Length: 364
Image 1: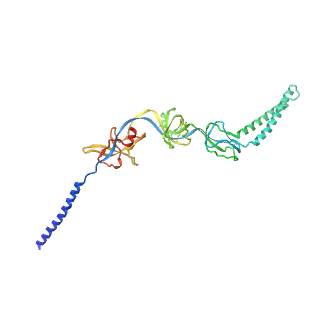
Image 2: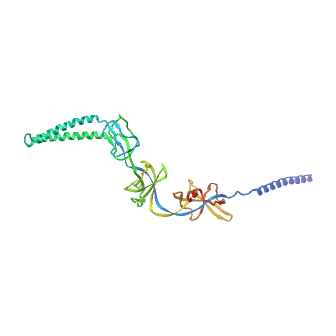
Image 3: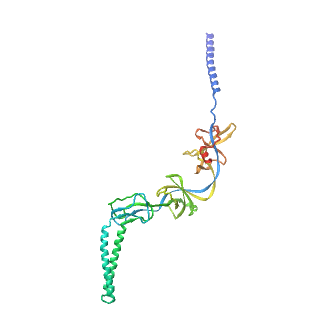
């Protein structure tokens, strides 16, 4: 019985040993065929030092040098319209006429009264020298002439006020009235805006007042033309500091000969200074932006070749595709400028001879 039991055990050991040996052999063959993936190919760049002109950033809005809603001073019905929406209006150009037929008729009556008063006064002048009339009658005729002349002048002024003219040269907006419409006093007829040059109004914290010198250059950009820069100069700085925001109101004047800028536009502003400061910079393609902080992959050289390590950095201003590095990197350190998505800490990499696409465009 014992002999059979030992044979059974020996037979089981042989079977299981063969199975395990076969599996071990297969695993060894698989391991022999396995090769680690090749290093990721990335573009590299170095932290460089640049001299950047000192600038101050702000936001503001554009304001017309002269802009009004043309309106009527007296009430009346629209008799004629002499302009089209969007056209250029010249100073003194007749824009609209109100019905003045009744006023013109009344003017004729007043002019007749003035002529009669003038005849009476001229007769009085001849008679007063001969003492044929009293001084009081002479004075009364003189006063009557002055009164009728004033009434004629007032009526002519009223008629002239019913002819609405452009107060200055500028671009007209959308017409807001129609023929036959009755306009009360002060009704808006059309907007008139002088566009060239144009004002740019913005506020700056009081700590930067020493940089706000009249005549200092400013560069503005607007969303409508993101690839265009509009140059101007500071023309005025308010002497009053707002107690709530501790900021000063600043006005710059921009050239707008192409009429691309319009009142009410939002603008990003850079105020240039004569001074320059040294900064460490990287191309913006090298930086990974995250809500919890910005980072780069730093390239380190070890025995087996270059590897990458993720590092948190602090960034500053961005100019022409270059980003200011405030902390986290040193001058000359190499970082990955393209291909960060496939990387992880400690991963070996192979450096591409060509720079990142964005840097190629700059170099060209």
